[in-house]
Length: 464
Image (cartoon, rainbow, N blue to C red):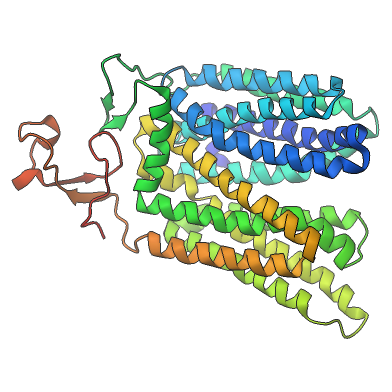
């Protein structure tokens, strides 16, 4: 899998992503300590609000950034986002009010919402082959998992030497290093001109719009108009339902339900990351033999199974003191399986987007996915937090498991079993001499790789 790093442009982009993620992880630790300094016992409320603002920024800004990527140089957009993130991180140690934290978090996360989908959309153009791109997706998943494991460890080592505000300097350093790495490469498809007269049709009919708002909306229309992408949105909801319980409820499960020491919280979250990393390493070879639909749906149905088993185990009355000890390895196993299932769903997702959008429309497609996926988390984070705080972990495990099951069933129904890229369709709205109909049969009926764009606004009704 590491052979894909031989491609110099991808290697530098991947390194830029990794160092930026490492910096983000340092900021997460530092932000918790800053919130405690500012709010004391109300630190959890401050962090909860900051997390909600982070999700809201992702939902609102990502589609606009995807549209903007078609109008300016991608490299300019990526570097500008890194500079904004670095500036916000450097300002955080100097704040004196909680609202200052909220404002800077919105600024930092808005820049991240611009950076991440544009970078994701660039990778399939750098690595056009299916196998190299799949390996790149696995590496990207590993980078996210390593961020959740390596950043806290690095933060702990740094805190032994320097006060926590210096962690924000480490965050800024990561973003600046990312900017330098992006500047060092020439990115494909960095600019797409948009004439004043209206839309541009490029490739098989890619969409660009004169107005930024219309361009931002195109990515969402692409998602909602493509069956496999509608299924992907349902799969994102299944992941968010399970992931919210893991990220919000682990501390309660470990400390209160099982009575374990605080260090075991990190071990439980580490099990989740280890499961995700293991599957990410195995997927490139597996996807050579098994199609994306089977792998992703299997992962989606595993999530409610894990949460259901957890709810059942937690709901059973303890019959002996040993039950608490037995429950700890059970929780580790559950989170290991949940992480593995999450990776099985999320890692191949980029392949679906590349299959469903023209190259020039990939920024809009990735931005829409980024925004819609985080909208799912914006729903499940507060739901999990509120339920765990008021009822304990049993009810939220059952309810979120039920939500994940409904989402997996919806994905199964939305994603056709037979899902070819090339589809037969007709264009009754086009004149017979339109260039797109060259070589077509009667009534303009023809077959080619079908994607939602300027000439293909609706999925063919006859498609399987």
